[in-house]
Structure formats: C-alpha cells, structure tokens
Length: 66
Image 1 (cartoon, rainbow, N blue to C red):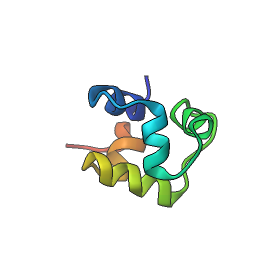
Image 2 (image 1 turned 90 degrees about the vertical axis):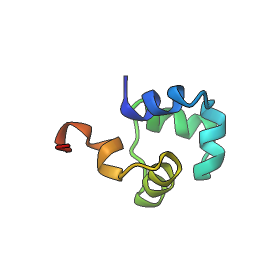
Image 3 (image 1 turned 45 degrees about the horizontal axis):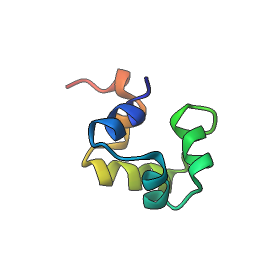
Image 4 (image 1 turned 60 degrees about the vertical axis):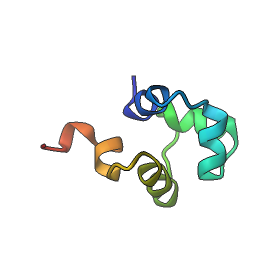
C-alpha cells in the first residue's frame, strides 16, 4: 500500500475528496496514488500540507530517518 493511500484511508477521506483538494480529476488522483503517474511538485506540496507532513515523509518514506 502506498503511503499516500495509507494516510488517506487513516483519515477516512475518499479519493474524490483528495482529488478536489489538489485540483485534479478523481481518475488522475487514483493514478497518482497507485504510482502510475507522479504528482507535480505543487500537488505534492498540497498533499503534504493537508496531512501536516513533509513531502519526503509521504513520497520517499524509506529515505526519511526519524
């Protein structure tokens, strides 16, 4: 499971709602969450801000040392 999906499900947020938050279609968001396409830097920032996490924590969790 992707970190993005894990965070979204932990907050009980639907994909369509996350899509609205970052300004993309639900289909596009689903592809981003499943790793088919990548988020733009702007989209990644919106997601990180929403979850109060760094971009690195969400998109590069294996590289973040806590």
